[in-house]
Image 1: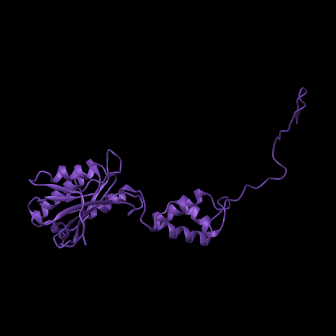
Image 2: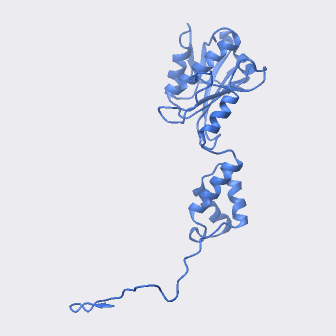
Image 3: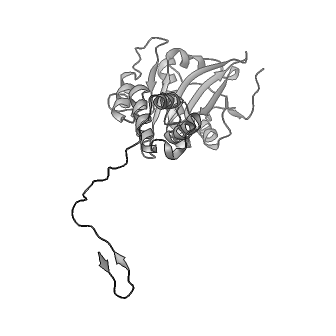
Amino acid sequence: MVTCLKTDEISIYTVGEHTSEAPSPKTKKLTGSQKAFCRDLAEHHLRPMRIRSAMSRRFGTSLQDLPALSTVQNFVNYHARAHLGNNDRGDDVREWVHAHAYTGEEGMTQPFTFGWDLDCEGKPIVGNGSDERPFIVGLTSKALVMRMMLPPGRFILHVDATYKLNYREYPVLVVGVSDRSRGFHLVALFIISQETQHILIRALMSLKRLYLWICGREPQVLFTMGDANKAQLNALQAVFGVFDGFKTLMCFFMS
């Protein structure tokens, strides 16, 4: 104990060990019902912070009385990696893509992967999602690609991007055709890291080349339609705009 002679302030210091140790606060753990709730919402791709907030409402417990956010994050992330196939291990993703890469020996309905940039073995190069190494992987089959074998004036090539179909929320590019019977027919799916003109061009060019490999000739496309997205418009123009009479439609109704 130290006393200031001018202000009479007293400071108390302790030296050595306490005679009775105070236990540290116990870390709050998830209960069985809370774990089940977390697993259910994780399968719907909700983030740990939203899951914790929903848990507060579901169990009528304040956020202060719930386990810490880090506890929820650890549980949700482990469950997603172990049971939902959600992991960022690039080697595992690359191995799967290469194992299913197009070889030309596939059956008509056998699905395979493809891409624009290929390695020395002809396998798609799997990027990490950065600007320098974008992630672009296509999925289709020979039967789906051959749906484009129609007279150019009898089909419209549709390009549409959708989101939240995978845990990382990478855009999924849907490419298909609609015919005179007003039916839509899927041609290919692309998982891409960003919806930019440069990436869209590479995706569409890979589909164009794949069609050449399978059908023995380049696809003839006169009519296309996409989102109200300048990147899509420019990409379609760059890849298919070389044909005379090429047009991009802004609106098309099916009934």
